[in-house]
Length: 369
Image (cartoon, rainbow, N blue to C red; front, side):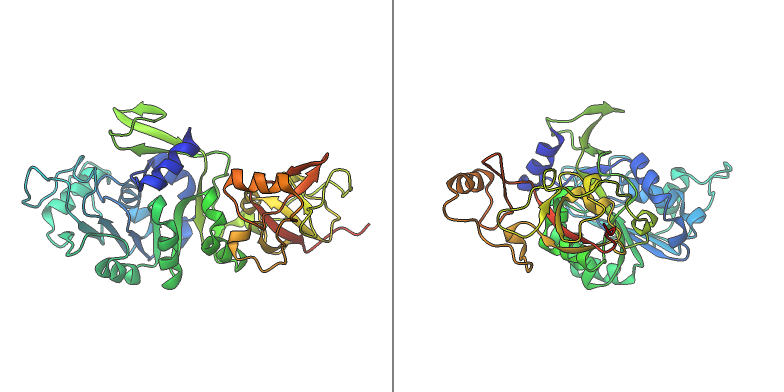
């Protein structure tokens, strides 16, 4: 259900997936050293309701932030739900407003001995320089939001699923450090995959098979459970992506299997073998191997070389040839999957087998026989 929900959201451009605070805290605890003295931008967030904003506002002093910036896009379905906005706007359209919040300090304004959201609310309500209207629609690629991006050191947010390519391209264009949420399928996008090849992006600490929960608008019919009266949906394909250091990607993947022709079939249209799980990678194979996308969660560029992507629409430059004309079953399988000529395939027991997207890799440290 979660996978279908994510695809539906992308097709319908329903991007209102709001990350839960627990999931943010679990991942960000590994990066605290990188926020000291930095300007953090959350540019796909409703500053009050976004848990990214809450996390950084509540931990502003502990992280030693220089500034926190958060922007809200025009037409947000939840903006203003928890804390009232301070602008005079038509009551019939209370949520269609784009604004930004810029915080340079958070103090214990109510003297209750702790810094909390009440102090943040007091700061916003009593400092006219903190919250202000945006001239445009608040989209991350609008001119004024790009100026905020230029000012930022690190961008942390959950960007719109339907605009993931455009969003990542903008971060790359301006050479920004980032920690964002994507989905496993986005790793096969040509733009994202190229960044993996260049070691300009990597997965975070949260494992692929964990998934994350998101708050979704009340209008959504499919959801996992209710939490404090709010609909929560689970997306099992969610993952964190970053260009910050992640220690697990400096560790070699422990390999224990050995190559045999019986266990590792070769592709019919490419000189390489198929691997069904990253922990099945043989320790002694020197040639090219096709592994699942989940391999990227374990990828260490010092141990493996990424050669290419085993689907034809990825702009391959690694010699994958189109299917053979006499393989009619393969052509039918291609049509059924909505794929195009050039996908990797095998012959298993006389039947054509087209594996799901494969990453083509080579072991830099193969064990000698």
